[in-house]
Length: 379
Image (cartoon, rainbow, N blue to C red; front, top):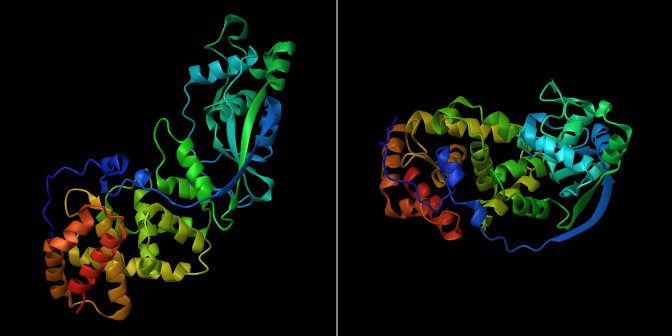
C-alpha cells in the first residue's frame, strides 16, 4: 500500500470555495460558461393564499427537500430545496404583511409532468403559510408573536373574520416556467435555478441535479456513496453532495470520456439525462465496476490515493477511477507491486500534475491526464 505525504500548500483560490471547505479541490463550476440555447416559456398566475395552501395539501404544488430519500415516486419529484430555515420573527412578519394587506414577493414554479408544480423559488414563504394554516411550526403550535398587538398570540382559527378573509384572499403572484427545448432533459431549468439561487448558501451543481434528474441513477449514487473503500479515501460525507458528484463523474467519464466537452457540469448533466433510468448502463454493471475499482485503489494506493495535497482532488479521482476501471476490465494493469511504484511515478510526472492542478475542466487537460495515467499504470 502506498502512503502519500501530505502537503501544506494552500488550495487555488480560484477553485470552488464551498467544496474546498469540505476538503474537495475542483474547478468552480459556477464560473463555467455554457454555450447552449434553450427554449423556455413562462407565464404569470395569481393565486389566493388559501388556494396555494390547498394545492400544497393536495400535493399539486410540491416544496421538496434535496435529499433523494425524501422523494415522491408517485409524482416523480426529488427536490433540491433546503430545510425550513426562516426564524420565527421572519415567519411572523410575513404572515403579518398579508394580514395588513401589504404586497409580498412572488414565487417561481416549474411546470412538471403529471400536472404537478415544483417550487423553484419561494419555499420559505409557502411553508410558512402552510404551517400557519395547519397550526404547527417545528412541532409547536404556531401562534403569532412578533406582530402588532391585535394579532399577537393568535392561531389561524382565532383570527377575526375580516382578518381571516383578508389573509385567505391575499394574492401571491407566481411565475410558472416550462422548458420546451431541449425536451429530453431539464438543463434549461437547471440554469434558471442557478441564477435564482444567488442569496444565502449557494446550492452546488449536484444538489440541483438531485432535483431535476430524479430517477434510479441518482439513488444509486447515494447508495454507492456508503461504500467502505470510497468513504475511507474521501473522508467525511459531503453535505453538499460533492462525493456523490464524483461517483457520477466516474460513470460519465467511463461511458463518454472520448466525447468529453467542457463545461464539466453540462457534461455531467448530459450523462445523467442519458442514463437516468439505468437503461443504458445497468445498476449491476455500474455497481460492479465501482466496487471493484474503489477496492483496488484503496488496497494498492491507500487512504490518500485521491489526495496529491491536503484535499481530495476531483481531477485525480476522475483519472484514477476511469483508468483503473479500464485496466480491470481489460486486464491491462501492472502487477500489484509494479502498480504501486507506477502510482508514485504518475504523481511525479509533470504533465499529469499540470492536468490535475490547473484548468482541470478543459478538454486538453482531461485528455492529457487520462493519457498519462494509462501510459504509466498499464503494462
